[in-house]
Length: 372
Image (cartoon, rainbow, N blue to C red; front, side, top):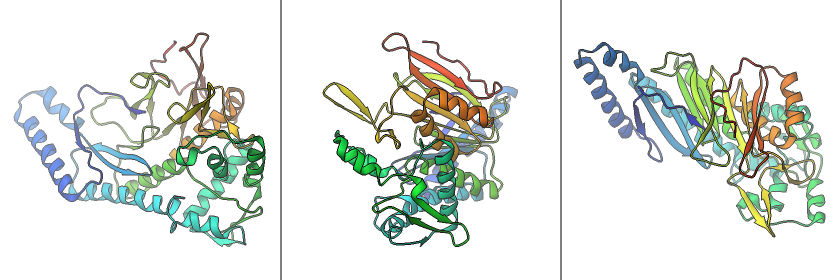
């Protein structure tokens, strides 16, 4: 997923692993020079295009690249807050990761089997959201399903096919219905031994929402936030565009260099899930990394699912859930939640073809839908 190209938009990109004050000053200098050039040209079209300059600030976190796009005509304070937003992503990664022994989630997983564990307020709210969504999706989205990824080898990208006995044993350790939450004390406890929570299915979206919250508090609007190639959150309008919102594209699940569809985001988020890049093949059968927590086995039937939602947390979580649920249950969910829309990509009638299934309100118009 990526912003749709706009022919009068110029990108001043700072793409280092970790943006620095020096890098910002360099990019700011570029923007100043571009702005000065526009002022020196006595051309109404050129002067009008000044507002289209966009700065892109990127930093790697959560095993992907986070990006902030905003108009280049910003002061030092605004860019300082952009860096603060990226710092926040790193802090959230330290809290949510299961790959660092000192993270809060690891502490919860170590202690919650023995009794209630106190949880930071915002993280507790995220767990409550995940529990509610597990119920609404009939178990298709479950943050306790990490042990299944381990038994299939996906957690360390070492795919293997477990035995039926191994799957059945692991499934006994999965299920948000076995997680007790106490809102008054903000504690969590597991009712079954060796359970664990994992935020791989909604962590990036949560980080994007928190970034947008921080930037909005500082009066910074007209921004596009991205978490990797799969999640994007838009606020305000795209600089240089005459239409409201930000136009973004959805990649084709079988032809990664092609754009399959576009949509204009108006203060909305979009997220795509699929097993096109994380899978393994054993004895001619393909096993994707998105697992159905209810069966303990890889979900099948779709190439990808893209969800449009008010928040990035919802969009990311539901894109995974819809991939597991399939078209009929996803359609039922969208019918009950008019703020949600989705684009499901299923196999076509011939090998290599795709069939698009658009769900949700008709006013969420997907643009340039591929018909092949």
